[in-house]
Image (cartoon, rainbow over all chains, first blue to last red; front, side, top):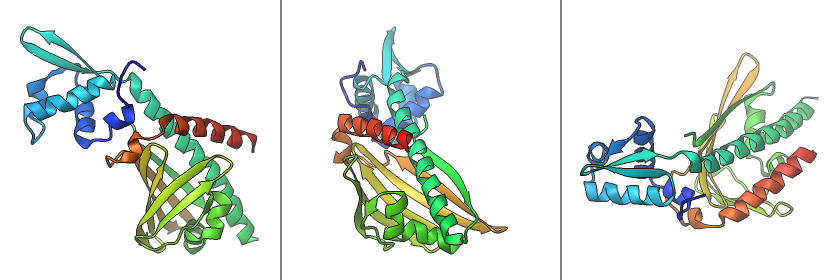
Length: 106
Length: 130
């Protein structure tokens, strides 16, 4: 993990999740192209991008006077682990539930 | 990125029987965990398994017998909502599960991530041994 901020913390906010979705659909985007999708101003959007950068979820580079942002999806693998954990958890629980219901039938 | 666990299950039992298994505390203890669950909106409860050192805090959000049940499911660093939707068709009860995460910013997110990951590992082992 290269980020200094917790990934869960970074994606706990709906604005930041929307930023990640926007960046997932594009190769890279400058701040003004991201800001148009929000009610808030560029300073506020920029603060959210900084949190995503600290979590290692977003990288940026300067092109002339413009800063362009890009998604780095690798830390999201941690979240994928969570999803696969619960898929398995519920599947195992359901086998037990099925047994209980079948016993009731008999 | 996928932040929702969505799964469908099918049972030969009546919709009332499946509903009862989802809402009766004693039955839930047999297939999920020990708990003090009650199907009353606003009821706060816990699911716990001391062996796995797992405690899940719940608050009941929706009780629409026997069609829909929803509650928060907060364990470790993750704040999620579990929603069960039931439908009876042609002698089969279809049970749809949706667990969505990260909808709220909450102090739970800042908590013991490492403890949670360790617990998940232990649980995987326990389940694998069954």
